[in-house]
Image (cartoon, rainbow, N blue to C red; front, top):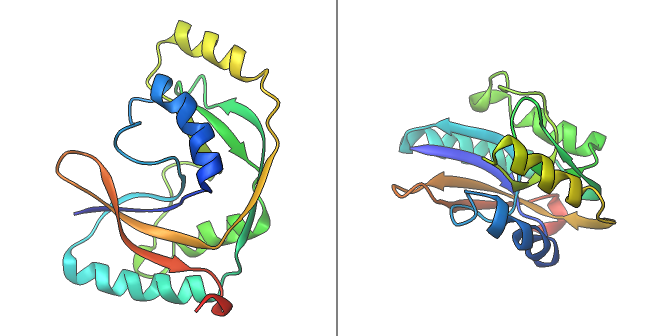
Length: 172
């Protein structure tokens, strides 16, 4: 089965992201707005129990994360993804690194660029037009996230939560 690890932002930020995603993101119906911490990976049922145990330990040793979004950006010209850029804090980078050790060891396919996708699979012209207008938005959003989620992919391609991990011992 295919799994992934992500942070879900507050409802307020999800609603803002979805106001764009429903028009510009082909994955809108498959997964809520999120910040990917570990891209999809394959695991068997018996393996995922070991992974979940490690994730509990990582979560316990990690304090809640402060995230800050100040602009819209894009991965163009590599691909036509438009996103809310999440400022890459040391805490966020550290959590990302921890999620690529132990039974989850492996080199990420891409450098870690914390973001929340709001548009993807756009034509070059549409990407250019949409990005141009969204870059003019005055976005200043900050919040604290106190949990991350192990997700799995259903047969229809959508993602659902397998388990939620609260950050820091004080959340137990």
